[in-house]
Each structure stands twice: as C-alpha cells, then as structure tokens.
Figure 1 (cartoon, rainbow, N blue to C red):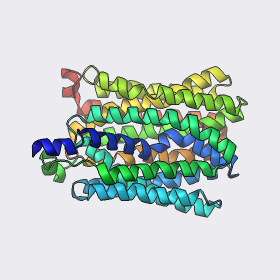
Figure 2: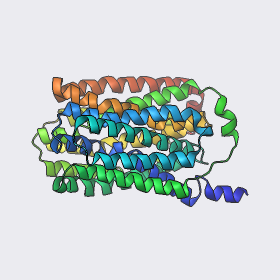
Figure 3: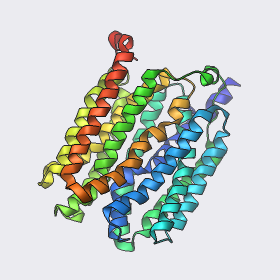
Figure 4: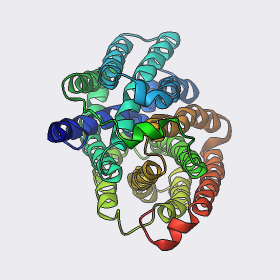
Length: 389
C-alpha cells in the first residue's frame, strides 16, 4: 500500500512531471510579463498604465484565489481543483484572444487569474508535502526555465507576425495542457503529520519569509514587466530586445538546478540577505542604463535571482510549516507583488519616467531586506548551527 501511494504521490515519476508542468504554466507571468505588456501596448493600442492594469487583473485574481484556497488545502478535492482551475483559465484566455476592448480583457483576465490561482495553490501545497520540497521545487523551477526558452523562442516572433491574439491562444493551449495532466496524473498525498499540523498557527518566521518573497516578487514585476518597453524606448531595437529575452530564458535554466545542488551547502536566510540587494542593483542597471550591453546583461540574469532565492525559501517555509498551507499560498506571495507591479510600474513610468522606477525598486528592496533580517533573527539558532535550516 505504501509503495502504491508513493508511486502515485508527488515523489513518483508521473506526479512529479505533472507538478513541474503545472508550476511552469501557473507561473507563466514570471516568463511572459514583458511580452504580455509589450503585446498589449504594441498590438492593442493601450498605454503602459492600461496594459499594466490588464495584466494586474489576472494576477489579482490569482492572489484572491490563492488566499482563499491555501487555508483549505488539506480539505480541498485537489485533483478537481487543479484540473478545473487550469481548464477554466484555458477557456478564459481563448475568449480573450477574440476580445479587444479594455472591459472585456480586464474581466477575462480576472477570471483566468482566479482559476489559475486555485489550481496553482494546490500544486504548490502538494510540492510542500513531498519528501524533499526544496529539491522538487528546484525541479519545478528548472521546468520553468526550460519552458521559458521555448516561450521566448516561439511566442514573440509569432505575435510579431500574426498579431496579439496569438499570445492569448498560447496561454490557452498551455492551460489546457496542464488541465489534462492534472485530470489524469495529479498526485496524492498521505494523511500524515501535515494533516495534524493543519490547525496550528504559522510561525512568525514563516510570515516574515512570505512577506520578503512578496517584496522580491514586486521588484521582479516592477522591472521585468517594463524590460521590453525600456529597451524599445531607449532605441535598442525590438530584435535585440527579443534576443535578450531568449538569453534570459536560457539563463533561467540554471538557478533552480544550482539551488538543488547547493541545498545542504548554503543557508536559505543568508541567501535571501544577499539576494535582496543584488536584485536592486540589477534593477537599477536595467532602468538607468543608456547603453545596450549593461541593460542586456542585467536583464538576462534578473529573474534568476528570484528563482534561486525562492527555491531556498520554499524549503525553509516547508520546514517551518509541514501542513502545506503556507506553501499553498505561494501564488499569493509571488503574485501579490506581481499583481501590483505592472500597473504600478506603468503608472510610475508615465509620470516619473524610468528613474522613478529605480527609486521605487530601492524602496521595495529595502523592505525585502528588512523582512529577511527578521527571519534571520527568528531563526537565529538554526542559522548558527549550519546551512540546514
């Protein structure tokens, strides 16, 4: 019986593959933000502010669904939630490919976000209930990097050639693929100590880690959502900007895999304390550089910082909360920042230019550093004894 459950669980081959696919599809905003905003501006005629609002509608929906689903993780019909969530998102994006008005696109993005957030919450909660959440999340992050390479190589040229609707059709296809995978291969989890921990309160260190990740996700969205537009408005040329995105996808193959190899060598809190200021430095380079090479170099590695850091913090939060509830809120902690980011970045860019974005990135980075310092203080004893928190 135990062998059967293991083969059908998150550590079995089919279950692991399903979770990796669903992570990539559900976290598509991390990959697609610059293409998404750029498509809405270039092919639909929206300004940066309205384009950011449309993407924000998707992300806010995902946050709301995740905040609702995460506390109920151990009571939800997980397979049905995952398959149904991705299936509804596929239909919403297919409808968006036929829409053109602001109101329709906002409504359909909100529905797609709600559905995606529900599915992704149970995916991340299930990863958190695996034997080694750090390693499985690292594999999922690697899948995100592989998917990003294919996305950047195929979708921007297709959008340029065939129009903006292609982007939403691509999203619909990915969501439909994830829905089918969940319907036939979503893993089961055992009713063990995680169930018994479900009624307990989350430790403060877990809350501080969640807030720190949310701040880093906000900085990610603030800068990365404008990467395409910054390059275009600086006169670097759309072809060269697309090359930067492809290189970014290739670079993103590495951070999660490296995080898996370094799991027992690096302390997750120390990783976060270094990553927050590094992310700010890269954001400043992207937003302020007038030369293509520094912009391209910083933009290419920018998402890798968050992917690498989040892998360590995912494992840390899993150890602080074995119930899976905190990690089921991963879409909320990632997409709260991402939801605010595109609209805020567009608004700031319209009013204060990209220099205003740079100032905002510094402020958000300081907040992230503060939260991680509070995690270090709460986790002082684990931090002192070695890298395995």
